[in-house]
Image (cartoon, rainbow, N blue to C red):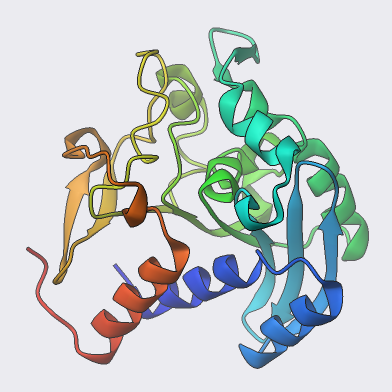
Amino acid sequence: MDLAAILAAARRANAAYVINPAQSRGAFEALGYSWIGQFRDGDSQAVLSRSAAGVFLSISGTRFSAVKLGDLFDDMDVRPVDLGDGVQVTRGAFDGCGDIWAWAKAQVPRGTVFNVEGHSLGGWRTSYTPLFLPSEQIGSLHAFEPPKGANGAYYERYAVALSSLVIVGHGKDAWFGYPRLDGRWMHRPGEMLHLLDEGYQVIDTGAWPGGLDLGDHSMDLVVSRLAALVEKPLEAA
């Protein structure tokens, strides 16, 4: 896995949390990106930016510090949305994605390739990218500490479109295993990056060891762990 590219995506995903538009612009410009704009409503937030490498849609996770109740309700609503032929996604995370994408597409030329990333609820929504873009417009995809967002039929239908999805879990993060009580929901089968206190391991998402640590659900901590790995690479565990 390209740890430097994952770190860059993690920093964008972290900057997507900044609510004030002027401060959001400053956060992305400090990372070396041109800030195109910010989408924000009662249960969603995202930023469009660009660099020489392309266009990036960075989707915010749950805005706990700002007490955005709409975000929290989206986290809790894991009722199924049936997309046909047995394909299902979770309702709360799915709701609002259409508004984000309608806004994002209106900001750039038709046919633009989007690189998408997000943390937590934002990573959850990143996995729904193929519902809003054809495969030829999907670039890199990074989901950091996302809950489980769809059933097996979804990942079978969109296996090709999601082939570039990098899933990053961290430590014993309690939210990576959520929802826990409905066995239909899962992560995309295949490799994921599991960050550890020291180093990392590459495992199948089905081999996630589990955990109930709320403190490990932290984009700041993910960024710092990735930065340490890029600065001083370690072998995978």
